[in-house]
Length: 303
Image (cartoon, rainbow, N blue to C red; front, side, top):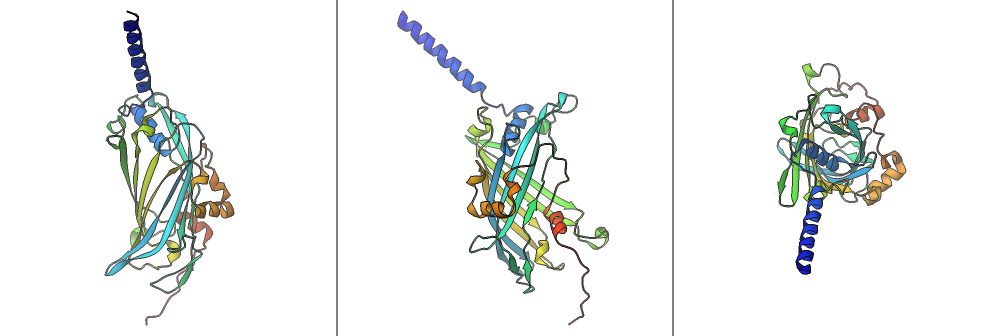
C-alpha cells in the first residue's frame, strides 16, 4: 500500500513538474507571446540590457554586359537594447534603439580599407565606412487601441519545423536621396535599394521564459546604387552585399578587426543609445553627407 501511495505521489509530482515546465514556455499563438518572441529575437526581455549582432560578407558589382566583380568585403555590427512601453489596451510593447557599423574591408587581409582603386575609372578614392547612430524603431504593440489584434499579430510570424524556426524580412526602399537635389522626380537620383533579412534559431531559446534573449543567426543582403565614395558619376550598375552572422553574447565575442576599430575610432559603439533616444535616424547616405562636402560637377569636353 505504501509503495502504491509513493508511486502515486511520484506521478503527481512528475505531472506537476511537467505542468510547471510547460508554463515556462512562451505561447507563440497569442499576440503577447508573438510580441515577446520578436523582442527576444531583436534584443532582450530585460530593459536596457545591451545585445550585439555581428556579421561578415562580400560586396559585388553588377553591370549590364560584364561579369560581376568581387570588389571588397564587409564586416558589420549592431549594438542595441530595448525598453518596455505600456500601451494600455494595446498591451505592452518594446522600443528598440540601436547604433551600427559597416566596415568595407580588404578582400585578402580583412582589414578596413582606407582607400580603394575604382576599376572602372582607375581613380583611387577615400573609403567612408558606415557609422549610423542611431537606427531606432518605434514600439510595435500586440493589439489595437480597442484591444483587438490584427491577423498578422495574432501569432508568431515565422516558420517552425521541429525544434527550429526562421523568418524573412524583405525591406524595399525607394525615397528621397539626401545626396541628391530637389528635382529627383524630374531627373532621377531617388534612393533605390532593397534590404533582405533572414533570422533563424532554435525554438528552445526563443520560447523559454527563463531565457531573456534568443540565440539567433542572421543573413543580410543589400542591393543598392553605387556607394557614394566609389565616385561612379551616374554610371549604369549597382552593388549587392551578401552577409551572414549571429547574435553574440557580448562585445568581446566579436572579431578582432571590429573590436580594434571600435576601440580606436568609435568607442561609443560599445553601448547602445538610451531607450528614450529621440534623435532622427542616421543612414549611410546622411552620414556620408555629414563628413564629405559636396561640390558641383565639373563640365567636361567630349573626347
